[in-house]
Length: 87
Image 1 (cartoon, rainbow, N blue to C red):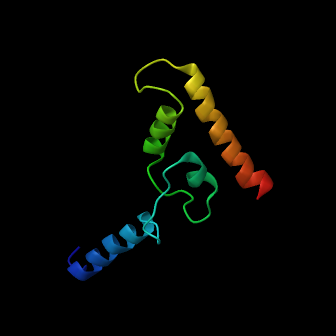
Image 2: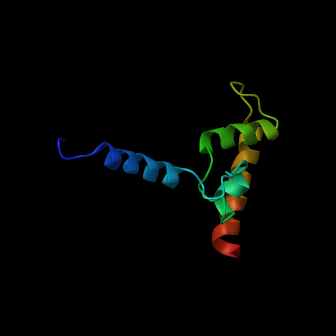
Image 3: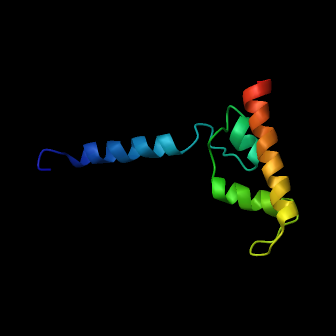
C-alpha cells in the first residue's frame, strides 16, 4: 500500500466509471433497448427497466398480476429472438 500513489487510485476509479457508464451517456429505458439495441445493450438498470415494463403492461408493483408478467416475459422473449435469430 505504501507504493500506491493517490493518482493511481484515482485512475482506477475513473476507469471503473468509464466502464460502467455508456459512452454515449444514454442508457436503455425499455427491455428491447437493453437486449438488442447494439448501442444501448446492457446499459441502464435492468431491475428498474423490468419494473417500468411491468407497469407499462398494466401491473402494479406489489400486486398479483400474472397477465402483466406474461406480457413482460413475452417482450423479453421477442427481444431475445430479435437479437439472436433475426440479427
